[in-house]
Length: 344
Image (cartoon, rainbow, N blue to C red):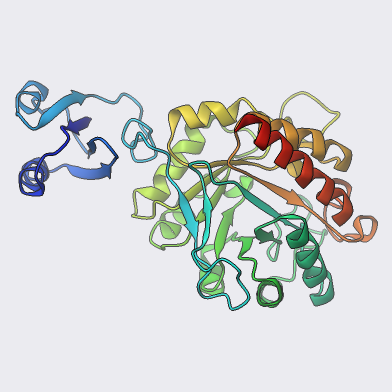
């Protein structure tokens, strides 16, 4: 249920209303906008008298929400959420105010599928930063279909990402796979939940107890509602710093690794206030398709891109076929910038 409070209501009267609603055993999510305040009521609202609440002189309107996702619902939070990635702790960071995603702020995340060595990750970090990337992605823990494939450098990989961060000032994005590894991610800037873990609810709930920005990828065969419900698991524990990611879904097509569902971007923006980014690398699995899909994503309003870049894709230990060379990534960045300028 949503209660919209009229503008210019005093804090005292608004707090009285909130306390009254909480007295009914309801949770109250408060969203303060430019012209009004929206109170999202969470819990059993079946016995709430909507007519009584609507009759209060400080209330503008009352609406029941049928969707099971509440806190990530745009009805609860009409304005776009802007997620800030802190950078004050990074010595080499050029912008100490943080990297913002959403609400018109665009993020470009780039780096290798897997961290392989210090030289590799540092050199790629410098290259993608020069092209315009403002976050460095890199896999330390790698979920692989085959148990015989490279599984990542794990804790060592995180330390190498930190070295690259100190060299370039770029915040780091890397995937967490298991709850037991959470202490290793204390100094990671953005925690990625991969497609295979989108419905690992125990992991999502624990991440909800942190204040870390969470990059939540859509599962290989999951609906948008299921993605939003997974975001709800994180937000219901108190962490509202969630970024949604469309990375392609499994269909009957066998020419690409997955099928990039770009309709998800405007649809998610309609349903939710959370930022939405796109991963054209995993969606296609083919390097030459990354550029056109990145451009298409920019055209349909994505809040950012996450692209795999490797300085030697042929010898990459993981997903070389979908990785761009730094010079090709530079071309993509220029194209995406022109598209965003054209749409502004």
